[in-house]
Amino acid sequence: MASAASGEGRRLVDQTDWRAPNRVATVRPVTPRQRAARAARNGGEPTLEFAELVPYDAYVRATALHQLQQPLSDDPGEMSFLMVSQIMELYFGLTCHELRETQRLLRADRIWDALAPLRRATLHLEGLNAAWQGLRWMTPADFNRFRNLLGEGSGFQSAMYRHLEFLLGLRDPALIRPFRRQSEVHAALSAALAAPSLWDDVVALLARRGFDLPADLLNRDVAVEHDPQPEVEAAWVRIYADGGPDNHLRLLGEALSGVAEEFGDWRWNHVKAVQRTMGAKVGSGGSAGLAWLQRSMARVVFPELWSARTAM
Image 1 (cartoon, rainbow, N blue to C red):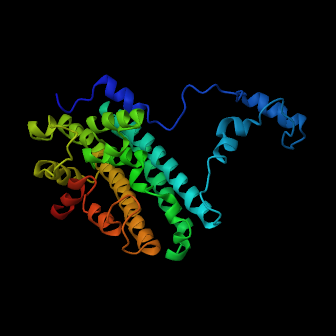
Image 2: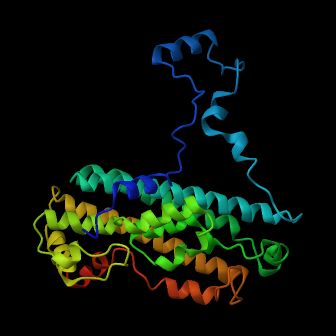
Image 3: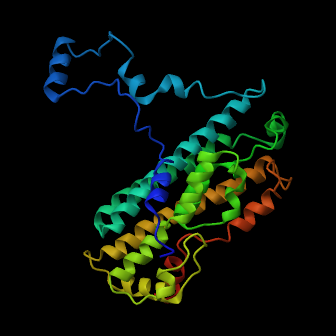
């Protein structure tokens, strides 16, 4: 069936997880009793002596993290631009992690359990949006002091952002072409494109719950972006008609709405940041810049969840 992801495809998608599962752990677990005994020995003061790497650094890898910034200029503002970009990359990966967990739970018909990762994803997207505040100081003159040194580098080329778009159902196969010479990245994106999006999994869930949805919708090629369907819209109208506390599908709809709203806010904040720092100049990655971003906002995440509200 065209919509089924192969086991190999799922394995490749999982490889984009931001965690490092094979990393050798150097953080030694402790029990509550050991923790209490250490506090008693310390007289309530923090531990200051360790036999090896500080446990916090062993877990967070803070030293490595703070060595990842390599500015291209001497302009002090570039560090802000670079680190905010890296923070956003981490939030992209973290949100993808939560959405994949949501997919896993929905495929097992665990709707109530799926609300938790969706809630976390919404909060992570709020953090992602807050990151834009760190660049509000930047004027065109500020950006111009180091922009040329970036060459053709552009946020458009973020592989993790593409993963996030694919998970949310925004799919354009052409957008993975820039990664053809990065074989592992390209393979992971290709697998993500061939796997169902979160919205595909939601639609499949509705069908399992008895809503009458067309067979060609359920068996479609998931690599192609989803077209809004009146039957899916009608299903959400029926779901929202039941305002009872046990209507988990309605709670799911609201949780999905929160994710879509925050993601839409990020896209709009991106437009505003470009307006602030570049105006209508062409983009660094070869696009029309502001105009291209504005056109891309016409693509709606979870479309029937929004159109159904007109009929409610």
